[in-house]
Image (tube, rainbow, N blue to C red; front, side, top):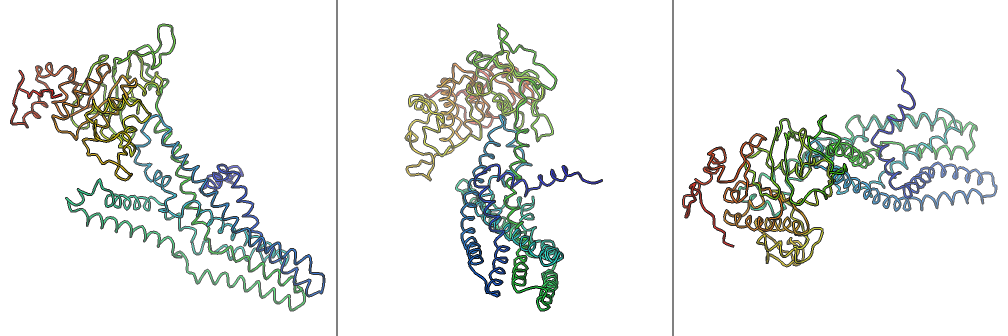
Length: 629
């Protein structure tokens, strides 16, 4: 079945090279137009030079006026000297602007989705690496340098074609012969596959392993364990093995391996011999004058620029980040999207989503420290095969403090993620004062949340900005630091990184206090729901208990949810929920759950048994932790 012109055009536009040129021209149209025009000028110079030289020789031979041919020759000569460096400058500027556009698109792609599922997709890692690191020189020259390589390759290719077309004046078969001969070297030598081979998943994976070993060896965070466990030889071996593997792949891709160089040279030698023999024969026979012989000989020489296919390696390297970003834009938009109010898997929330006047409720109409209810919530991560939460029912009273306990993988952190609307449940609903969370304005809702996750961010910024990234009064910042037990760790304007002048290096426990201060400061600026996911795991037991007492005091007017494994801290919450296999199996105060002698009692007893010296016991036999504030 014949392919329609529209289908053929669509196939052409879908190719990586075409997508690169389309992106380049649309993204930076001004520089792109100048780049294409200069490219055309450079491509026509060899053919123009052959014609100008023939014209000049003919005038000399005939004794005619040389003004016109000398002017033409001079123009071509000046263009040959001026166009390449000017083209390089335009290409460099175009490459820098295109890199900026691609980086902006990647930032928009990663930051745009309201959820976080797109950043947890392992199958997108290679594309993300290519899109992020393309200008670092790992996969090829940076874009601004690549533009010069592409320009040189295209100039030679188009210039060779233009020169070959000049030979139409000699005989129809001459340009066909040279185009086939020199063009065949692209296939015979397969140099066009160099960078295509380097952008396979095998290459990207080897590069990631190499980078990972390099980071472990050079970053201070891993330095202690690398030495303690004697990992230096392993890291060196891993880095060397993967780096050598990369070099081997590059060598295999670069060497002219598919067909012999001798065969390629034989093809072009025979083709050129046939052409020049016929050209000489007609010249000696008087069929061609000297002007024509010089013109056609120069054109035949210029046609040789077509050879060997050195263009594609640069094009493949430049197109790789464009293709990766385009794929990420589609995949990440879908993976990070939230379902919204209109998508409930065919189920409507049982609660009303309007206020008394029939208007849709917004986050601002929800009362302070609202009641939170998980109603038959089921959730599976996009890359998971089993539900993390399954028919979860849980009610958190307004203004209460709730601690969530359970084994690893029980779904504790997932509950916090769903409350932050980083994901939406697959089924069921989360209701805020009876309003489905998906019906609330997302930005306004998140403004009311203060959260500290296990993997909180350590910003390389001053202490003030770590506590209040969006800014706050000094009283709010210092008050939050005081509540978190972090006052005096550093000056408010001191960078929290040793790599800066006056920078301060903090311990893990001190950083956790900073993270807690961040949450407390947000409460001070209006947040009324606090989520704490293992916020003090690096502190000692008594230090964690005391800090949580401070946090409870600072968030007394908010609804507070704590995830922790330390029962000396958990017991301070008003309510405790035991989560197992994605369901809430027990809910009550510490005393109530201990009296039930169920799963909570068992877990608490196991942890308490680790402490042999308990200076004071309560009525249930557990250690009493006194407030030392």
